[in-house]
Length: 254
Image (cartoon, rainbow, N blue to C red):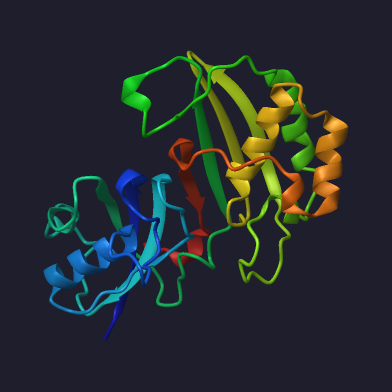
């Protein structure tokens, strides 16, 4: 009998070619976890993530599910979190193991995901791989007006990489806002789903608005065009974090 588990994962994506296993790279987060758990549990383990992250993108909270013959990985009799982490590189951490219903799916059962993008306006060598250093004044009030416009739209084709093979570019954004904390500009965006490159392309376009190189009317025209060639350039991956994934309570075993 197989038992299904969710694992909550955090990682620094600097050294990795993204989350998903790739034919041309053995250095992905998913592959490292597959290898570590398979060796530890002495069975073939394949984890399935709630989403994909590009090379260099980080996660403070990413969920994945897997099946195992072992029935008590989440019961606390053995410190399986510690054992799991002992098999992983130091820049990947499994923070929690959770028993879930046999039908639970980390990707398709997620109801919302939240990303944050960090820009540091002051040079800081300790943030070189964890934030985008951008030395220029930005009009945050204007960028927040643009962010508010996102919540009024559904089709985000203008902020998606081409040839992604998704069935739809419709997303429902429930939160989008900029805030300033010390020397950091932080963009937080929450939606039911995201397209490939979507957050980084949105941020790249809003930086142009903050520099007064684009107007709010220009921003609306970009959205309405549904053409990513009209959007701003992708900002660097090192500033992007997946920070929260939400699920319905009924998939979790009590």
